[in-house]
Image (tube, rainbow, N blue to C red; front, side):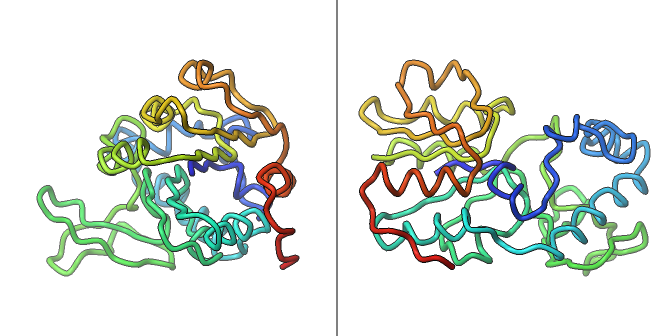
Length: 230
């Protein structure tokens, strides 16, 4: 399963695709790149502190819960572009975060890999256990995606690939669909599904819908029992 910002939208988390890619007048590229961190670290911290505060105020929605309930039928492996923890809070057990985790921070010292759980505001004075400054544990635009190797290895194992709430425009994550087997069944749930080059030759079943309604439709298409109304 591959998920993006659209699965969390119905929890109340803002998606920057829908917001025109702006936050407080700043382009997403001005607050989510290594260059932005070097140039205006306080603005970057303000952005992620705001996102963390927003995340802590919301709950998983029914789409997250329906994904979790699939585990009663399938071996569900989630690869997510999201930095929120709503899949985990809904009870999903196998979640690989491509782009990091909002409720974690990490040491900025090269060669140090200390990752720390973090729910409050992060300041420029906060340090790791060795006294080095901290940064959000986020993969910024222009940085390598360390989890990609693991994600790529999972794709050929899939008999069924469910894609939810992603524009399939952000690489390298968007290229993951190119690693599935030709006989893999694919369902793509999104209100504005992208015409992906990688997906086109795989004949996906398109469910043009929000995540919650789309997951309910998917249960019907897979002939699964009516999901719990939690």
